[in-house]
Length: 166
Image (cartoon, rainbow, N blue to C red; front, side, top):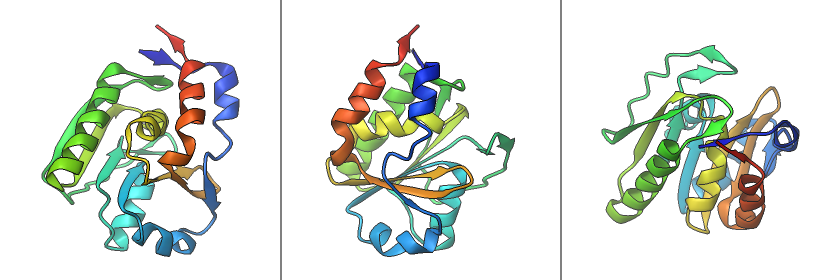
């Protein structure tokens, strides 16, 4: 299991991709995605409200640390992972890897329901996803972050390398 450090917390407060204060400003880019992964309940709900169904959605039934009943039902492929706040567990990593592999192979959508917190899931997503994957996540009180996984493989690995292994 990897645990975030105080220094990394500061670094990860900076968006890893392009920040869109208004979700609708990113719709055309999102719709043109070859493979789409969404991290966060609010982000996934916004996609679904626009009838956009990501290949993989990752949620934890919380929005800005408050309980939220996502009641998301866009796929029958629902996976579960345990991931305490401030960590990236082997369970989360393996579940993301499974979902990506199977979504690519069978063309089906997958939802990963995280017990704990999904905030740091974007890092394993960047490292595990195909090069041309569009990744979306929410930047609290700022908007939507949109990035291409292929552009951030090295940076994502540097972040992972700076985690404390426990």
